[in-house]
Image (tube, rainbow, N blue to C red; front, side, top):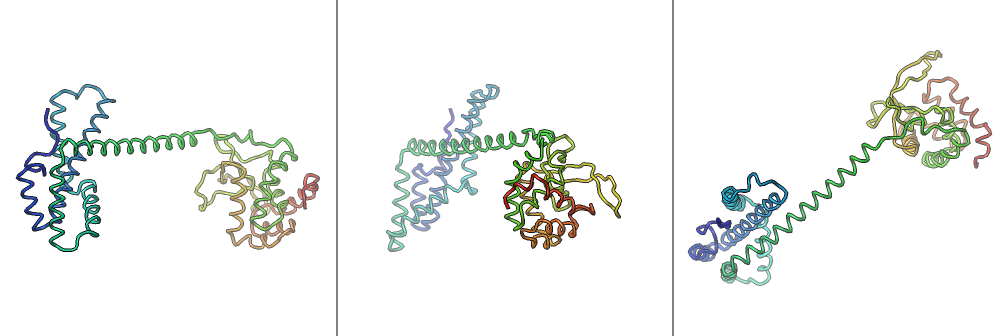
Length: 334
């Protein structure tokens, strides 16, 4: 079995290399310290590679697990660890140097003392049993691999969760149809209140507009696949919209004449998102600034929306007023 530690002529435990390091420590302590740190990092990287291969062997096949293959792999790992440590490594040597130099700052008072301190450090490292250093590197590399594997596992679980959410079928448009105006008002009134509070207008005006756009929730805008768009305000998907959309036939008035046209509308994941986007849509447009000044006057709000060009139907605000006068709105709080 080949020894997987760095070759003797490059390793600090060799007596001749140690002597050279001591001499170098007297002439250039920082450079000598860097060499020792690189050698330790070389052992760490080598152990890291060995542990990685051991993990692969545990889950892989025996196709490339012959004794010769393992021998060549250990030779390659040994050479690779030395090359990596000398060409920048993984930052371990720099960390060791910074840690040692920080420890020495408070105790070194002269250049001579610093040189003696570096030489003592080299002697201490050199006296360490090689098996002990390998065991330390083995433990460190094992913990490193385990942390990487745990992080990869967590990321995989997160991706699986996101994929599961994205592939989860959305409700159909038919499934979100309201059976009656009572059900429509009861279910969407809280959403209208929150949107109206954000806009500073009467929540009845908001809910009445939603009732007009959807026929009291009986005619929701559906996606091409039949999924629910949850769009209860008929907001179209223009260039400002980057989300999902539903393309349907719609009735538009051009010069007072009703025409069937195909248009793209914004699609949401819930009624709550629809009301939130509605509030953002109105508050971010100069066209509807007069509507937002209507305050509690629901009729003025509807008239200002039409004046701002919210809909092409010339009777748009009149229809909203009609809904506001219906029995289902009379029971709502003022």
